[in-house]
Image (cartoon, rainbow, N blue to C red):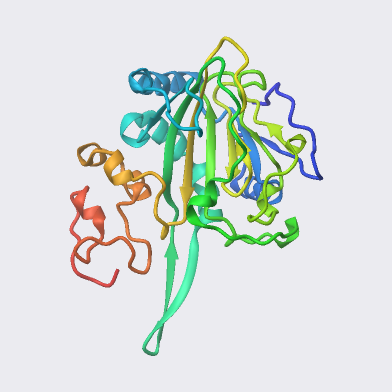
Length: 308
């Protein structure tokens, strides 16, 4: 359904596009993100499913305590390890075909190597990098603008939009609005086109930012190389956001999925989610256990010694 929310105005030659999640194609979404750094998916999750997600994470939010450092304001409460804590979110968002295909297009790595006189071709699919619920309470200050790909030590040169290639980025994020998200209550602000800038330079002028204003159930997709940050909550209401990143399959995950999600809970998950979490091999041979595909640890499948 078309959203009544007005799309952000163009800034610096970049326009943040909105797509109806029920009719959008992954190809259009990918082209938009490659050009601008991010886009909206309106109506990604229905109200009933969203209510279930909030119910699943509520006990964990209530048990959280204030952050003691500078990155999160003390008014923020968090939940991590969402695959085991919110099966609804995992199914409806992380497993949504549009998000899966968009992640695959940006983050799949294809290489070839030689073993003797035989050329081997390898495909490494994306994996889950991090999961978070953020409930930003009244009075929370604005978060500093930052790039989430810094944990992977990226060094990116400045390019133009028509020079963008799918081997540039290491991670892609999705932010789902669980409540109405406005400029006043702290909507994420980001700089369109900053994924094309030199990663050794700072964000510069805050006037280049646009705000990810959303209705409950809307989502915002963004490359991790974009400068972004939460804004100040100047209202008397709490803003709740579900956020996750996918990253390339051969990189270390930001959130340790193997400890964040108890293995007994992982065993109950569908195979595609188990593999997304990291119970899989990144071709050619990254992530094995006893030289075998780790899917055999969480599924009743036979895995033996073989070329991975």
